Image (cartoon, rainbow, N blue to C red; front, side, top):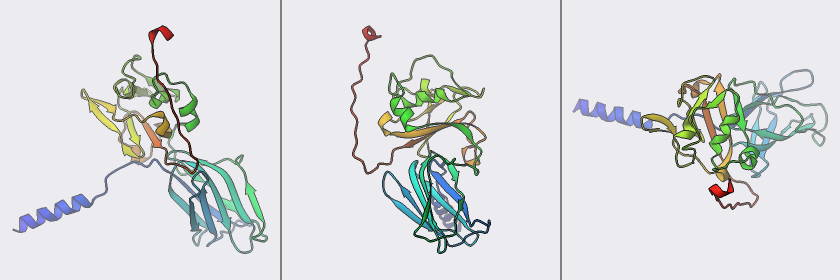
Length: 266
């Protein structure tokens, strides 16, 4: 009886463990200081997604630090306020898949009714991560020519990645060819594929392949990571293709297409 109880306990504990996944969402972190370099604690912050209008309120801690986690890729606006200082506004913050942006804020002495606005020309630093690769943004996905409407083909734009197959089996529903990459000289078909942070790999003919290729209209952007991965991406022997799907916005939009492929039109 005791052994059965122990088995039940082990099963319950195992079921409660979280499933492993890699993060595809972005984050923003930084430190708030005054002109003398002293930290400003308890400053009020507000981060707004420009496309959806959703706002997230927060405050800096006692050492002036703040952090926003789990942000969908997109455009954001950040404001910071504190009594005795001018309001700080940072506009046109473009966050990409799996990006860890650092925005340090210096509040200027003055009235809260006054504000200092920083535009899109200010560089967006990424000091918390060291992975290297290329972000294929939404404009690339939508506007670059793709003869079979397979967005994963754009991974070939990344420096260090080489397709290792002939132009066969590249259709979204035939995933063997689109899974054949060599990253910085790695072995063929050892790439890890992620979809919104979840594993998107399958085994076909005893080979590692991508499981699902989303349509162009569903893809927000994706990042091909080729080196210096975080520990969370350590399962790959040859790079990681991290795809982020669209999460919706306030603007009404849609698309339509006709796919016609005939030899006589080549």
